[in-house]
Image 1: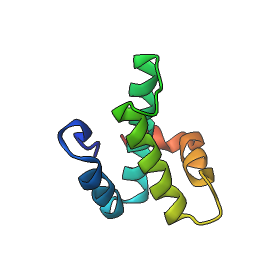
Image 2: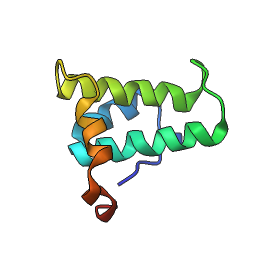
Image 3: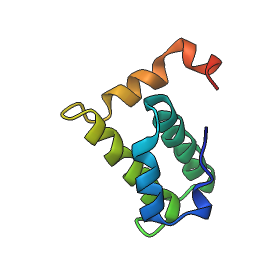
Amino acid sequence: MVMNFAAVSEREFALALEAMTDDELFELVADLEKRSEALNRASPTDEIFAKIVLTENAIERRFPGQMLLPYKEWKDRPDRLTLQ
C-alpha cells in the first residue's frame, strides 16, 4: 500500500506512518526515494524530501539503534519484488 502522500499534511502523514506494517513503511520510503530521484532535486523545503525524513525517522524509532539497516536489508531481499 503506497499512501497518497500529496493529499495529506505532514502531521497526518507522520501519524499514518505509525499504523503501517514494516513492509508498508519500507515500500513507502522506497517509493518516495524513487519520486525524489525522478525530480532530480533534493531540497529541505521539498515536500518529498520532508516526507522521506519523516519516514526514515519512523523507521529509526521502530528499530532503535539500527539506523536504516532493516530498510536496507528489506531492499536487498530477493523476495520483496513478489510482495508488490
